[in-house]
Image (cartoon, rainbow, N blue to C red; front, side):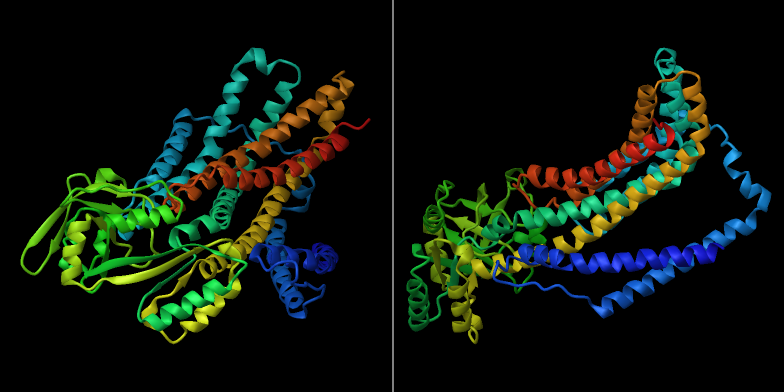
Amino acid sequence: MLLYENLILSAVVLAAGIGVGTLLSKLFGMILVRLLGMGASTSVGLGLSLEAAGNTIAVFALIVLATSLHSYRIIYKFSLIELFRADKQGEPAPRVSVWAALAAALLIAGGYVSALQEIHTTEQFALNMGIALVCILLGTWLLFRAAVPALLAAWRSNKSRYYRGTAMIGVSQLLFRVRSHVRTFSMIALLSGITLGIFSIVYIQYYFAERSTTESRPFSYEHASVDPAFDEAVRHVIDADKGHPVVSHLSIPVVELDASLTNLRDIPIHYYSFAEPGKTVSILSASAYNEASKALGRRETVRLAAGEAAAIRPMLDDQTYAEYAGQSLELRMEDENRALPFVALLEGRVLSWRFPDLFAVVDDVTWSELAKTAAPTVFEVYRVEGQEKAGVTADRLNALAADREDVRLSTFYAEYKRTQEESGLFLFIVGFLGLVFLAATGSMIYFKQMTEAQADIGRYAVLRKLGVSRRELRRTIAWQTLFVFVMPLAVGTAHGYVIMKVFTAGLVGMNFTIPILLSMGAYIAVYSVYYAVCVYSNDRMLNPA
């Protein structure tokens, strides 16, 4: 009987799911096209993929087989009379332990502290994340196992609130059923936290796609000058684009030194550990930096006395000037070693990102002396209007430099398009999977509440006969259901926020308020819909008119 029931229900649900999925395929395709920034000209058709349908049927068959075997194991474990009387058996009162509740709070707090610590090495990252994972897993399980019963027991000990209205009914039901919710709540909180954290990370990357591109590609076009003919060809292509006129054009000379000619590896700033021999350190003059900063519309400038230096903060780092105070940049020149103390940390980069991201600014006199010992590389940079839409010109420049590795051409549009497409694709995948996870976890709570409501029909009928009004019963149902939904929602939100903070630590200087509120708002909105439907269904079942 159970096998036939599973097969019939599964066939109906599977057919309905494939049908609804086919109808929604165009909608999701349009969302994907929108996220990738392909524009309204890209058409999306409606169709059924036989391969996708076959994979869905295969996965669904495995799920049905697993659930059937699990049901068989439960059924054969008990006798028939025990199964008929299962809903008559109450649950034992949970043991309330203040120490266990305190241990849960300490474990979760310790996991958060370990995860949010400043990390400098891969080994430290692996160790901290391992400790955080173990602490959060155990803390979450112990939270619902001990802390929630302790909270309900404390509520019950407050006699004035416990005996007010129908509070006694809701608190007693939650307290005696909390043991059956431990695994469900723990799993929902952990899955929701992971889903929310990953979705927030991807959405933040998509939300700040243009800003991150602006940091890695400050100018619209940039290339190393190799010969006058190529420079002129590039200028001709850019000037020919009348739809994106040139705002500024500069020539920025840069002295590129081998890392072995500096002491950067000896400076106790973790990013400079990448300054290995064979890697280059780019040094700009103060006047060139200020001119480029002005061309970019920035207010940041630098003033250096003779023998002083300023560092440009690496893009993927959160360094502060406090790490540079008292440190010096040593230049190992042919006839002498010159130490230039760091007097400032500049936030805005003026040349495109490359690895290792080692840029420094020195005073003009020192730079002129360096230029005599090492021939500078001149970078031609252009800033144009509407650079995020200058795809045609960017393609023409890339074709022009296709066989020239020495020109080191970079364009804002190519990087912006790549970042938007990658983050948009990840956002679509993570958002879709996140929606599935949220729907699954919300359904778990909903059907568990419906099952418990079915067993409570007789008890609520007695309460109505004793004179409890429908309004009081509806209020009890509402806040009791709210407690069940809010607990895993709150814990999952906290876990997700910590995950987001860990993996966005390198995105310095960005305000995450809007993307976080949007992602968490979508998360809460899904659960709010489930909550409203659950309250409505329980009220109709337990509190009929």
